[in-house]
Image (cartoon, rainbow, N blue to C red; front, side):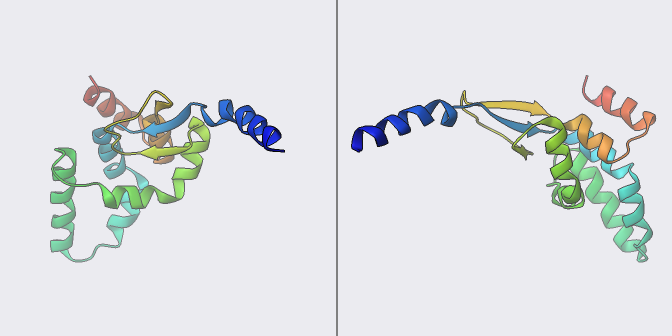
Length: 132
């Protein structure tokens, strides 16, 4: 019985050693696309306090400069993550992935994020310039 269990475990090892695909994003591109998107436009319409609007604009500038976290953007993208991951055939999406061993294959899902945000051609042109 123990031999059978050992053989079953050994047979399962190749499946466990499969490459995991993890999606990554180009942060500045996603920041630009978000703030130029219909999603942000809808959020902005609900802001009535001018001071709140100024704070949002300051945050956007700091996010683009890499000086502030993008939690609000990730939260706004939450409904889209399953579809983005499915389209890119990834198991997860990581904003920052400082290390991954050889069993991890990273896949840039920025284009899928731009699609979900309904980025127009002007936004995509800005993104292309950012990525140069």
